[in-house]
Image (cartoon, rainbow, N blue to C red; front, side):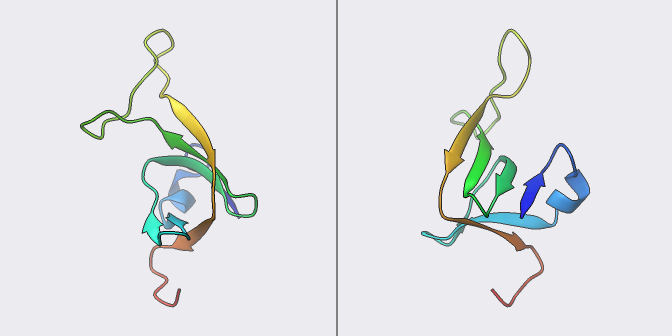
Length: 78
């Protein structure tokens, strides 16, 4: 499944991105594809605030790949 918070914020709001190796939620994800394991995570500072590019004003993103799963927030079965 592919989700993007900018393209479909309402649908994306009901899913967590889970790191299956640690079983923890991955914070600050803009988009994720659990079929390929790729996701984009906002870069944050020491206060957990998103860092923006000084020239463009756009948030900084890191593209990552891992063992992830998109899980519905109200799904208690998995």
